[in-house]
Length: 230
Image (cartoon, rainbow, N blue to C red):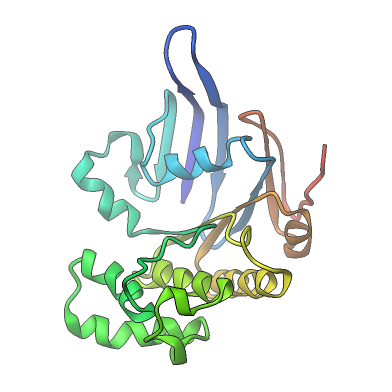
């Protein structure tokens, strides 16, 4: 599914360089639930950007499914990104579009016909428990509801993998656990999930594979792991 082979990412040039990742190697298989943990600035977000082709490695190789991400041309990236639904901490919903329109937009960008939009968008919103809020704008939704719309949008193209980048960072504890339950349900239905977080309680509750990142290096990779604070 995802393979990193001796990947490093260095920003800047000459004497003003910053190493975000250093010689990182790991793989994520189909249907896995993997938590990538570490403090802010450890390298978690850089890993996500490399997977979806938002950044290119300074050295090494990134593979996602049948895609050799390093070699993709700019016009090929949208096809890759439809295979990876990304969920962000700040939701990234379009404020002038309803919940229905935000989810539909992902299908429109993919060039899907109107019949697909009519059929699939209500199903996606029902899956996340928001069918009755489909005509609400983001400003009319709670933080938890906004994140559930974002999850519906991430799932609408039936991606091979869902990548959640600190998805509970702006949520209260009740909504936080609702989002985690939803991600676990998505995984149980067969979609690979990668969760980037620094929330110890969430990681220990999930009790799945944990990749720990510190200063751009993988320091631990354990099945049924825990978030060990250092």
